[in-house]
Length: 434
Image 1: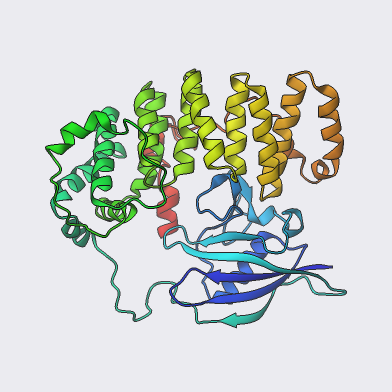
Image 2: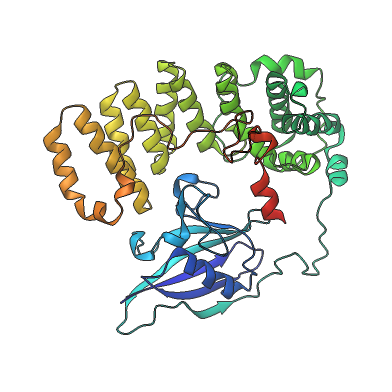
């Protein structure tokens, strides 16, 4: 029987890691339970494995419930249903295990060895430990105290009035009184926040600034934001985190959702500019991928293709972005580019489902363009993989979402009759915190 030997390293100030052995017939949920035991966690929060190694990368996510089995109301891929033997793991492969979406305990999981053992038990074993795990709830006597909204406001200094307006905008956006909510004002405020974060925080590991980003707001903001630098040394993300703490809401979620809402209301230029701007601060892949998709949905061929071309070069190792870009090229009948994207995705895929998704798209494209023998040859070559997981080879029409996007003002999917933002929006987050 094949046995995986994982080295699990906690992202922490001091070296803390564990060596875990587990049989190939076990699931990712079983690995989760072994990690919980190895580090002394309480197994009381949701978790996810991200096979790309990037947190919140939905294209590579396998999510899990601490109790297992509670998957009926969730969408996506589940750790409880994913056998280790079906993940295509090779020696040296690394991925991310994230436990507790609130405190975000992050662990790098590396396949240290894959061995064959006769009569080996399938249950996980902890075979080596290094370092003491920190206290899960922060009672480690380190002297550090959680920053309060008042502390964040004081640190923001002259940006405090902007922080007040951001918090008020978020309260109105997700509040009961719809008359107070103004999407255009919300967008303008998000751009003002972007300019403030840019001016007062150092931007690291970002793409070069695109021409004209924020240009419509720059002149106006010069009169509002003084050239003083009270947050010298902070990164742009750290400045945004201060706004986040004061608002007592995940502003990154607010900013991620805004482009889609703008596009749904017909504000395509604003949605595109929002994505381009905030991609320089965080989640570049998601924002730029969304930008290409929004422009494509609006029928703006030249801009959508230009963005998609940029994405496939910048995120060459991201199979999911390659697949989504391929759909955009296919939509505008740039079939050779679409084919290249799907083949790159097949080569870059770090998980079996992503690989099969890319194969499915390529087969569909070959058939659509009349290359039936090639499609049949590829189908035959991939038959063993398809037999393991047929649902991953569903035929997607180019550029269709796997599930409909629920807008904040749409009816809630739970059937209550209320709008989503007044019903189930944010409940998952609050449940985790409890």
